[in-house]
Length: 176
Image (tube, rainbow, N blue to C red; front, side):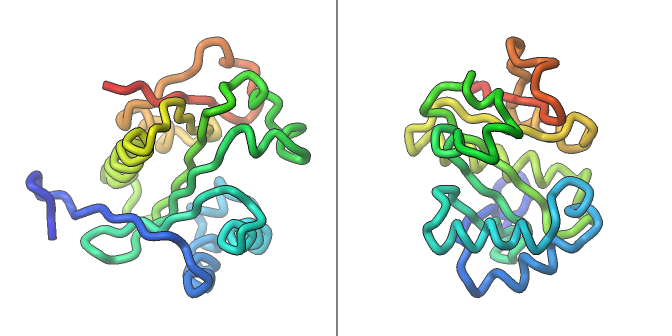
């Protein structure tokens, strides 16, 4: 069912073992391969999440009840370990209670239609309702489509980190 503005209803459900084949398919798609790592490695990370070896919370987001993409929430403090810390030393400059989010749409044909912005906005609303106040996202600055979508969802560059984070643009969600 569409919401009052005619956009699809957005839902979230935890990733389960049964989702791994679908995620393997998504991870192999060209628009994922451009920005995510090796599909088998990434799928291993997601398996670690659902089996409790990683504190990241993985979710499938749905549009009108149909699986439409992946979103995850990770805790900055829990990721201040190797190899992540060597790859992203900027994490030491964020508050201990900060959380990061990542998302990708399942289908490349859905890119550029505002879906990512709507999903991310809804997800950050949920995180704020759960008490999270420091929410970041760290796209590759070359991923201009994502950077624009994240800006429309309320994310802004963290000035003190600009130019010091390598291949990540660190954006913080600014509450309206």
